[in-house]
Length: 158
Image (tube, rainbow, N blue to C red; front, side, top):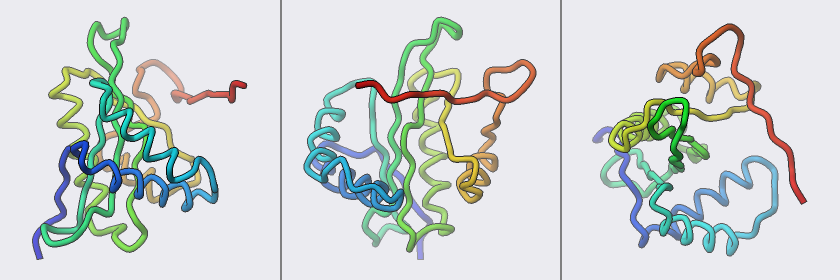
């Protein structure tokens, strides 16, 4: 069996990307947005030059079971792009098979290719497997430097 592989998704793979994001939604215990909404949004994001999706499979003969979304934005603090890793999901059947590692390795390469000086993400502090994966790839709670942990804040808007 060959090693896991990851690649930059193409627009004709929008349905695959959306289906994996719907599986992520379901994994998180939500029932919205709808599958149609996911697909429409994924199709719009494929048109955005500052956004891309990565897909990964267990091996060359398997369908994609992992997805990752990257967003790029210019940072005044770095005078270069920052990369935001917005979503990373691997289907339960292929977790711990290297699919997440393949996605993160490609994500960091893509961020570097875009000229990014930093890549950031948020994760639930109780998701031990995800935290271990991110730490294994050099992510830390102190990406901005200085004392203390970086905290992610947010709120819903109407």
